[in-house]
Image (cartoon, rainbow, N blue to C red; front, side, top):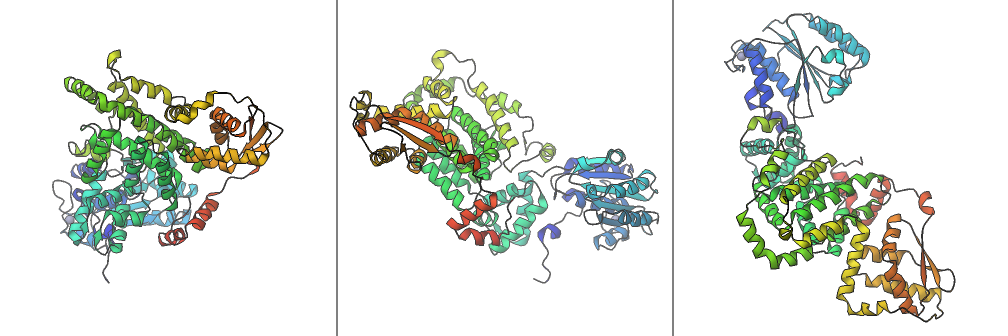
Length: 609
Ligand SMILES: [Zn+2]
């Protein structure tokens, strides 16, 4: 234990060949060394933990090596190499500009620069986080950069290239480091696990790679964290327990609920997710990514775009087969809209719940039943005309990491495992192309009329969905037959009677718990003999109540035997005064509901963002 080294240090690459996922870049550096075409200043840009400093160190060692091989790699045997490997070389200086960013720091550096190396040819100065230098420090440095001594080479590293002033940029050779691909990270983690004798599950490594967002250092430190938690075993469960990752099983269950039009199930699942301390935006973005993943899983040719372990792929493939392209497209669109509106929304939970309800009402369940009948005919058609879609789709995505075929391209491809709006927009674009391709100039008799109907229905959004639900209710319950008969009596009723009738109606909305709950929360107030007022706190609630006004009024009219009953809807003015809960308040609320959250928060030292 006394010699414990974190994996990120223990397995830090010590030659160009072992640098993971930056092969285009390391090849260029090696060529420069081979051809003795060295610049005086390099700028290494890119996200954290992708190998900038590591490459700078390897570069410094290689250019000082007495016997580099014909690949430009250091020999690791000569005196200079040994001093580098033992970290006692005087030819490498590292300055962290994040903490040493004053003019004085730069001056003491530039004074050193004048002294030539005692061993080897070059002195290499690595300035990390160079964008943190103060502007006067920048200017002081510029002089040295303009006329450096022959033996000095500067390697500036930054995560924020746009903060580097143009006068410096123009004096540097610029190298852009990219996020490392999921497969590259997984393979390297597997290598480390094998070397350390750690048992792993492929799903676990994949989840770590996704979480590390293309940074190897982060991936390795997560790896260390989970392996010490699991005492030498890394399972998927360990990873999601440790990392506040939402188990993808939730997404699979949710899609099942959507396909079965099971609003209750979807809302309950979301509640479970919130109770585990996950944030709504995180959830909805994850859901959008899940739809995107299902979409790419529909075609064997695009399944390589799925950044998941082999065993999980089968799961995606199976669920993808249950979803139509039109459903996935609609689902992506809805979840993406929800994500975009999230930060502006005053009632974020409601926004997500609405989105889930809409996802349940896309008409997929009905369609599935219809498809059962027409399945055989459709299958016959597909066989005659197999997969007209795939060509267009692969072309539509030039950044497709054809990982195995072209490793160089794969390393340069930005992998964006964290769900981001951009990610989903891309997915939508893809979906659009896909959809256009999927229905190429439809001969009218070929088009499934149900598909067309559901697509039209979904467009105007919520109110139409509700209307559809209403129609369904009318279809199914015989009780509703009396609805059409207008109530002619005008019996007197009290506010108490009214509230009772109101709650009875709310109780009938079993398939719509959200609306049912909202109705129970906002009780009606009698204004005169037949008019009553309902005050709601959220415009969306008003919108939803307005959509079923006819149902509400006729139900109350029948119940209270008064044909004049009329509802007035008003949005509370207090709403403008009421401040939305701050993230801290929301967290406190959640902790009140689930005290385990507090200890979880402390254990993982989570911070509100
Ligand atoms: Zn050497």
